[in-house]
Every structure is written in structure tokens, then in C-alpha cells.
Length: 245
Image 1: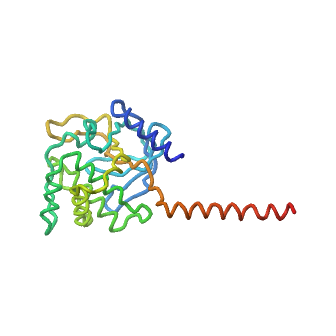
Image 2: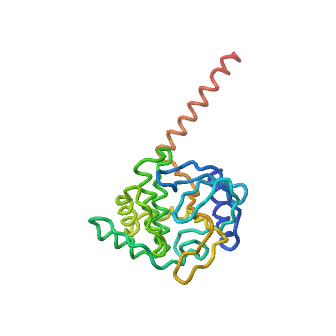
Image 3: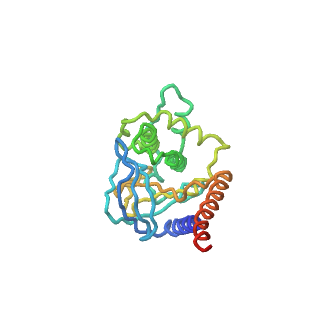
């Protein structure tokens, strides 16, 4: 119930913050990857603790800073006017070796589609594993996807090919689960400035993605958790009965 209330509160906050910025405080850099990026723990609107993940490499964000941020969602029909890349119309060309089909899917995607693919990849991070090849490949792919033509080429410190292919195939498949996108926020600096028609917004802190909820246990897993709780409760009660008798 606490998780549901927290998620509901964040969604309400996101709806309000599309028009009005909220306070975004950075805390600790606790998901560092080889080439930078990764994620940090922060606080939105003074009291909502979140884990954020980098979606652009050509800007900086600093730990222990208080920022003003707009919140947007990567769902169909969302207003992306406050996001860094929502108005961008030209992107660096993706060229996955030996895979022209998936390369074309990404190259033909608009800003919303790219935010959705970035969210999909961020949802697959193995947070407990830290800086491993899998996580670094995900970050490299996110940076490749969210790379405007007006920016330098994204760094190639990790092999992004597999993650790019998976993102393209997920995005293009009409049967893919996309409902989880409603659990994501795009956290964008409210002080960014217009850079020209078809260009990303300029200045401000490094844009971040936030996933609002954690996975819910499958029914079987939930059943075992419930049985385990009863067992623990029974084990805690037996000594008390023994003392009483």
C-alpha cells in the first residue's frame, strides 16, 4: 500500500510539474559506470526519494546541488516541450554492424520514440551488479539513441550493439509491453534555453530518467512470501506461549 501511495503521489506530481517546475536535489552517485553516466539518488519536491539515470552525455550534473526541474512522461501524447530533446528533429546516425533493419528503426524514430527506448533500456539495468559489461552496454546505447546531430558523437567506451538491437526490436514490436512507460519520469532542467528550431534545448543539468515503481512479485512468489510471513509469525509466538505455560 505504501508503494502504491508513493507511486500515485509521484504521478500526481508529474502531472502538476508539466506546467510548474519542482525542486530536484542530487544526493549520492551510487551507480557509477565505466564511462560516466549511470545513476544517482536524489530527492524530488523536497521529500520524494528517487533513483535517477542519465539519458544525455553532453551535459553535467553535480552531486549535492539543488536544481529546479520540469517532470515529463515518455507516454504517447505526452508534452515533451520542457525536455532537452523533445524539439530535436535531427540525430546522429545509428549504424549497428550487420543489422540494417534495427539501425533503421532507431534512425527513423522521433524524440518520443527515443525517450521510450531509453526508458526501456534503463528498466533493464542490473543495479546490484554495478559497472559490468551489460550495464555499460545499456548506458552506451542510451547515449547513442539520445544523440542529436548537433552534438558530438557519443563515447564508444562499451559495446552497445546488443542493447541497441533489443531496444529497436522492443520498440517496433506492436505486441511489446509498453505499459511500464507510465512509471517513468523525464527530469529536465527548468533553466534550459531555446537553441534554434529542430535543436535540443541548451544549458542546464544533465537530463535524468526516473523509474517510479519497483517490480511486483509474481503470484507464486507472493504466495511463498505470505507463507514465509506466517511461518515467521508462528516461530515468534511459540516461545511466548512456552514462557506463559
